[in-house]
Every structure is written in structure tokens, then in C-alpha cells.
Image (cartoon, rainbow, N blue to C red; front, side, top):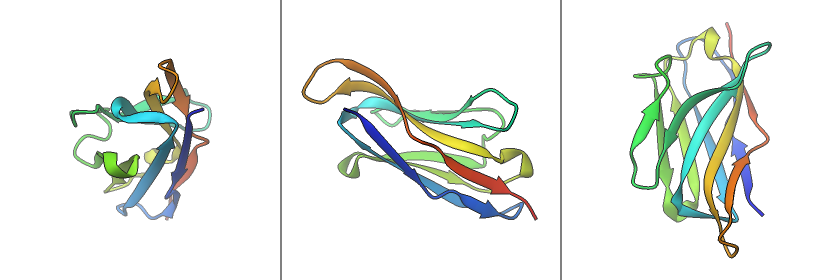
Length: 121
């Protein structure tokens, strides 16, 4: 069973920074795609950024130049460094993992429980 546990959300002032973390278990971490999505009230869930096992990354236009996604395969952890935060970044942020479940060989598309990020003065 794949489990994703996020941490690092909170309240921050505009222009501030936060770093989100997501620890994955039950998945072959070194051979998967890890991503961060977010969902603001009344809006659909949207992709923020993703990183593949080789380290290539992709970002939504709205966060390019401000957010950085990274991964530590030794710790089975993916990070989202968020800088120059804006009120419109306020949302619940979800970790996502797409890959092979360890020990089963089956494909999994899994989500964390989400962590709230609020940008407000």
C-alpha cells in the first residue's frame, strides 16, 4: 500500500517562503513521477509541479521562477520550495505519486491527505 505524508504547510505573509515535504512509502521511489497539486476553494485541483526519477522538472506557468520541486531518493521524499508567495497561492497542496508499488509490480496513482497553505497579511 502506498502512503504519502505531507508536511510544512501554514500561514505566511505575502512575499514569504514555505517548504513542503512529502514522504512516500510502499512505492519504488527511485522510479516514479512525484508531483504537487493544489486546490483552492471553489476551484479545480491543478498541477503545480512534477519531477521524474531522472530529475527533470515541469512547472505551472503561475509558479515558474518562484517554486522549486526537488527529490531525495535516499529519503523517499519530495520537496516543494515556495518563494515570493502570493495570496493567490492559498490552497490545499497535495502530493501525488505515479509509479510501481513495491513488491507487487502494479501501477499506482496515489495522493496524500493535503496540507493547507495560506498566504495573507
